[in-house]
Amino acid sequence: MPKLILDRQIVDDSATLLRNSDDGAFAAVPVSGTVIVPLAQYLAQKTELSARGDVGVWFAASDEPESLGADAASLSLIAVEFPAFTDGRGFSTGRLLRERYGFKGELRAFGDVFKDTLNYLTRCGFNAFVIRDDKDIAEALKGLDDFTESYQSSVAQPMPLFRRRQTG
Picture (cartoon, rainbow, N blue to C red):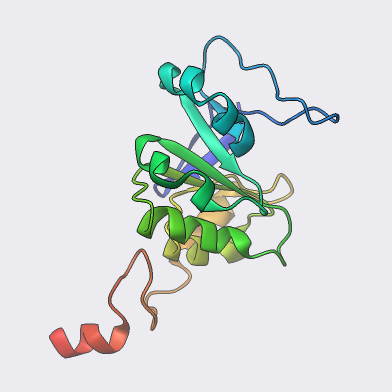
C-alpha cells in the first residue's frame, strides 16, 4: 500500500485518486473506499458524491478555490496537485482553502512534492504529503523540522516574529 505523511507521521494511503480519461470523461467512482475526485467531477456530481461521505476533492494547478467556495468546509479531504517544482499556485490554493473558505480537514499535497517543500507547504496549511516516488519518505519527513523559526506570518503561525517577540 502506498504511504504518505499525515500530521507528521508516515501512514498508509488508503485513498484512491481518480483522474479523467484521455478524452476528458469523468472516471467511474468505485462503490466503496475513499476516493479523491477532480474538482470538475465533484461540482458536476456533488449531490451523489456528498452523500457518500468518503469523497475528497483534488485541485489541479489551474483550478480556483473559489469554484468550491463554502463547500470546502464540509469536506474532510482536499488534495492539491503540484505538477512541477516551479509551479507554486498550489501554495496559494492551500492557504485560500484554509483562511478564506474555512477548510479544517486533511489538506494533501501531491505531485512534485519532496523534502525541501514540506516546511513551506505546512506554512500554507498543508498537513498531508504524498512524496515523489523517487524520494525517500522517511528522509522527506525530516523536512518538516528544517527550520525552527519563521519571520513571516502563515497559516501555521499567524503572528509574525516581531509581534511574537513583543508579546513574549
